Every structure is written in C-alpha cells, then in structure tokens.
Length: 102
Image (cartoon, rainbow, N blue to C red; front, side):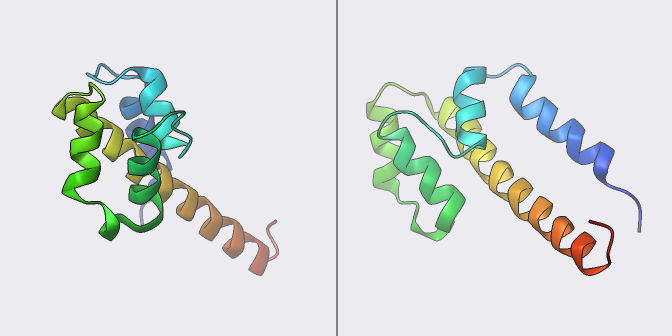
C-alpha cells in the first residue's frame, strides 16, 4: 500500500492555506471543530460528530448569519476533513502502540 502521508498533508495544506471564499481563520476553526460563534459552531460540530444530523435548517442558519453558499461549503469540507484527520491519527497511534512502535 502506498504511503499517503504526503497526499494527506497536501490536502490539509490546500484546504487551510489555499485560496478560498471562507477566511483561513474560519476554515482552521472548522477543521479543529472550534468555530467560535453560532450558528457556525453547531453546523461544524454536527459535521464532525454526526454528519447525518446536518439539516437544511442548519445550513440556512449559516446563510442567514451572512455566509455565502461557497463559504459554507468550504467550512463543511474543512470540518469533515478535520474529523477524518483526527480519526486517522488516532488509528495510527493505536496501531503504533499495538505494534510497540509508540
């Protein structure tokens, strides 16, 4: 299996540091599941914890707060990739611990 570390790092760098409609601070806070204010905090937490609970109402609330659809999309992507990254890192740490590489 190929090492995906470089590709994963490039993806994270692109979504956090690349050009976007959402600010870098908004994207970083979504990635870290630490959006500072409502309604973005609720939306990001739903994406990270249980994406099946994201509703049209949550997206509409984010729009009503002044975010554009492009900004909401970017924030949601960052939240999802942030959670996936945390899960990946936890799994790698568990594998390393189980194999004595920790």
